[in-house]
Length: 343
Image 1 (spheres, rainbow, N blue to C red):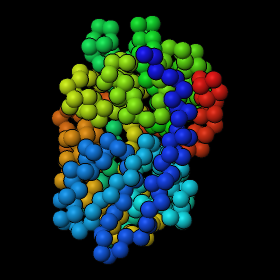
Image 2 (cartoon, helix red, strand yellow):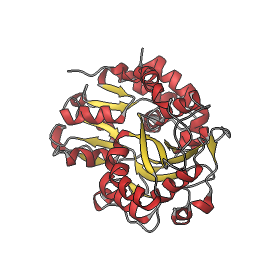
Image 3 (cartoon, helix red, strand yellow):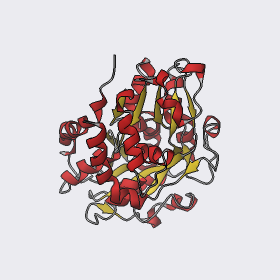
């Protein structure tokens, strides 16, 4: 069954459906010792949930998850419920974190005296309001058993006739702008000129099975064999392999590096939020995360999982974009993308 290319338009409905979960008590009392965390479903299930019992034993705090599909969706929820946001810690990508940080009423500075493990975080992965939990390459995740020749080596492979309607690409709000930026760089454009990228994607829109608004949806389609390849992260490879499904990843030039992590929400529970973030930066949590989630640790004392090392891009293939520029222009890029691709 061919997947609908218009999946990116479902985001608005998702926001409405999820808005009610924010209507929860915002103040954590000394008695209940709860820290509420707005995070991705797979992050909760694979990383945080297994660590939660020991965290409660060590700190007294019970972790209560609230699930988001994307950072953009999470920010919209929080802004719509700012009087009573209902969560203490928010998981987000670096680009959207920079945008959110300007909201001084909704997000708090990290209290570094209460988060001593920040001292072990690699340079560039922490600022006044955001600290990364991991970083990863955004490359091509694929099924070797379903692609011609059993291997993908370049971005151009995704657009060959044999891959027609077998590829999922993220909408602009997922991995913010990366689909557009990769296409732009491959076609003579840049961060300052994404027109070649949008034109290229518009040319191939009927060849793409899905422009998705949820990474997990694309991964499920890959698992079922409805598609053969997707833009994704090493965690997708791990999840597929854990389910016994053949999966591989390649990081061709240009492969963007993305940092994702946490911000503290002004929800009346700064101590609980700080305790959670401090644990997240610990050697124990970072080692567990990289081993089970296959993403790179930001704690300098922790080595990446062995399986991850094989898919990290070479220095000449990796690219780090200007997140401030992406924040400034992503809205316009998304409008142009929707006009050209989603029509």
